Image (cartoon, rainbow, N blue to C red):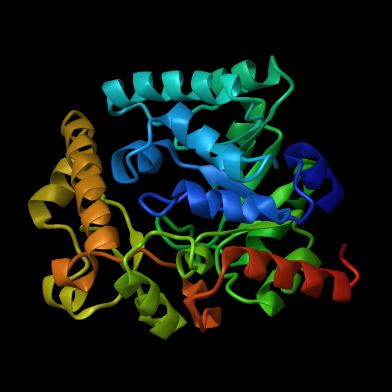
Length: 327
């Protein structure tokens, strides 16, 4: 499936720099694609955090490298204005010749129809088999398998268990979560994954514009320092345990939990949490620990020991895969 992933994406190295709000700046995306991996545009991060109108941001990446890039489309419908904006962003991405899309949080069929019409491919984020089957019913070409070691909204299964539960589905599976060094990368490919998606590892790079406090927190953290909190979005999110996290706790308040379970109120609570998290994560990423907020990260922190150039990381992982005769 490595060959199929590379054919789908145009990548030479089966490695995705995952889309990250707020950490996906154009320079980081370009640096990964330039050496044969594939960087993925996160449109809200591009415009709201890094100040680039989407088309201009894509063209900035193209000015650094002509190599393929991807596009992240969160298609959850709870915020109508965001849904409409996402449709506009997808059209811009297609006009700018992006042909690899990663969808999440909704039915991908309308994205698939748009992208397939111009010869592109769509992969979809999933955390378990039942969601994978729904995504395949929606026409997707591959699956991003988000395991329990991932940062952000993590799954619950181990990388191996998740792969084994989906290995018969006949599409490329991408390991997302827990890969922070070359050994873990090779292990994931040996399991049978067609590629690996990494986020946390690429925050601790020279090209990422996240605050140095954030990068240093990743370098210093171990896997046991990653905890799940429901205070950001109402559902569990993986973050680094800091003194601030310890002081405020990791559970949403009782009223918030009750409203999130209410048939009618849950829509408004999800909207509230979405707006809140957008603001909090932007400030935490750009202002550092002085703002005393959340640093999202996965258990792959245990493999991150330095802030490095992104391209150097990709080359090292490629060399490890070649040494293991996987490429």
